[in-house]
Image (tube, rainbow, N blue to C red):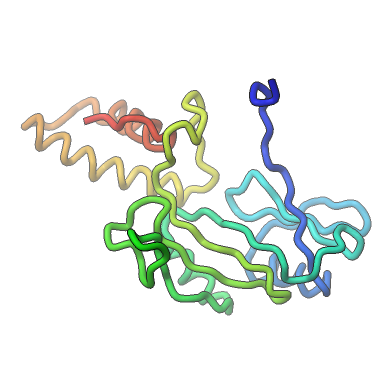
Length: 196
């Protein structure tokens, strides 16, 4: 069956009108890594991403500005602030509420809820989505990895907060906190039941 074969998104092609302008925006302004590319193709990878984007004059006949994609971040406020500091116009925060999309951050900052968006110079839309805990089954439970120091740091901070609650429940300091943190972080990333 096809579902038994691992398939990972490697590259997405986005349509741009001016290749050099797009290259400058993604590398100089956003700080995305310029990968080794064949002639006529520019490949760029966002920090912490396993997938890349490509653009070039002959890669697609889609209209420039017609692409839309999601960028997952662990702290949407920090990500928005960094983009604004780099001169990128970021829209207002919005979240998925009971009645659909609602202005502002999710009041409880629940995972998958808070969003903001920005456009590249061609009008291609990038939606920032704050994800701190994955849905069950979304990540291979046998693998835990972080693509940036910031993502790992945020996971450790969440584990520290949860561990503080754990110690309150047991009424004592937990000398085995490194193992507890590891179990918490792995379970959080896999979307499985968190340790208590």
